[in-house]
Image (cartoon, rainbow, N blue to C red; front, side, top):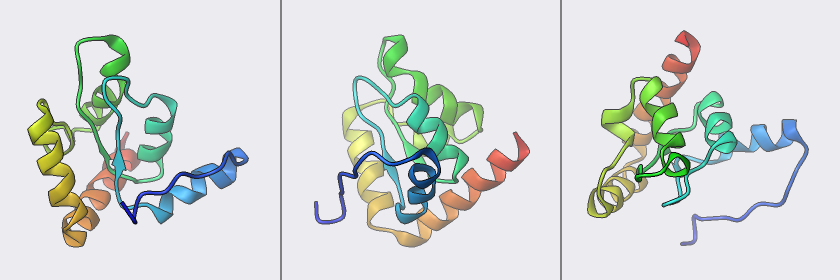
Length: 109
C-alpha cells in the first residue's frame, strides 16, 4: 500500500510524463481503463488487466493483446490477477523486462 499513490489532475504532458514514475499499471475490474491504458502503454508502462464479459471491462485487455503481450499481462481469474500483481510487484527485474517488451511493441505498432 505504501507504493500506491493517488495523483492530482494535471495538464496532458505532465500527466503522460508521470507514467515514468510507475513500475506497473494495475487495471481496475470490472470497469477497465480506456484512454489511461492507452496513455500508459504509449509511455511504456506495463498494464496488468483482467477482462470481464462487457465491452467496458475488455478495453484494456484488447489493447494489451494488440501489442502481443496478453500472455504476460492479462489474467482471466481473480487469483491469477492477484498472483501476477504480486509477482510483478515484488520482482523489479521482471517489471523492467516487461517494460522493455511494452516499449519495443509500442515502437513497432
